[in-house]
Length: 277
Image (tube, rainbow, N blue to C red; front, side, top):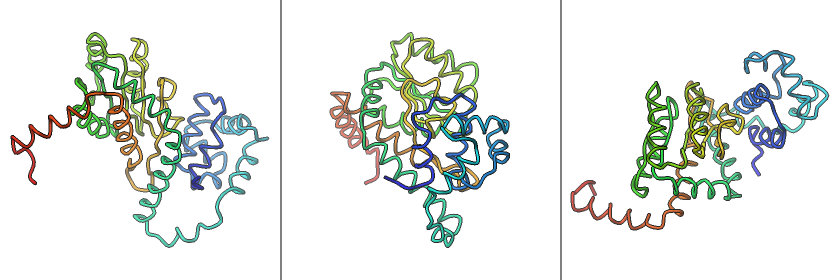
């Protein structure tokens, strides 16, 4: 099992019933995993956008006497070998952080049941709406591009605004039974609202998010977490992208004619000279 700071925090938080405010604190700590053992309650409260008493209640909810006890625990389990990373420049550190995110994703996939279940749910939906706004738009586009080669009706929802609800309604009227969402920070309010609405129409919501404590968690039937890197000015999303491809593979397993569709596409592409060999 990975000994990364984010992985240890995920294990610590799992199994606890947290309030939305507490999930916000947990999400903040995961994103700042390397710094978490050294943050004061005031600093953590400011980073998470909550009150200092909320941080104290969060620590108690995890089974500690208070926040100082939680911080002592995090310092005790922190690896002692931080020196090697200090020799890396900021770009190398960002790459190493992404490698840790991928290691953690690999550990999560040791139990393939959640991804396999999600793949079956998505394969059965006709049409299949795929939602991703702002930072997550490229993830939704990439999934939709490849999914359209094996799924008969994929509908990309990558623009917000007043038309988003209409497009969800249109998918439901056409027979959709599920919606796939890619949700990455900073989380747009309209994505949370769209998922809440999608579930109200009876759609099963499958979400790939940066954390099990992301704001979209409460509005998802199946949530698959994959952490983003936060070491650069803009987040990096290697793990969510790879998880999307894994989910696509699982969906193909639920489509009996997926291979035939791929072969048909390859024949057509060759006849049209679509790609440069």
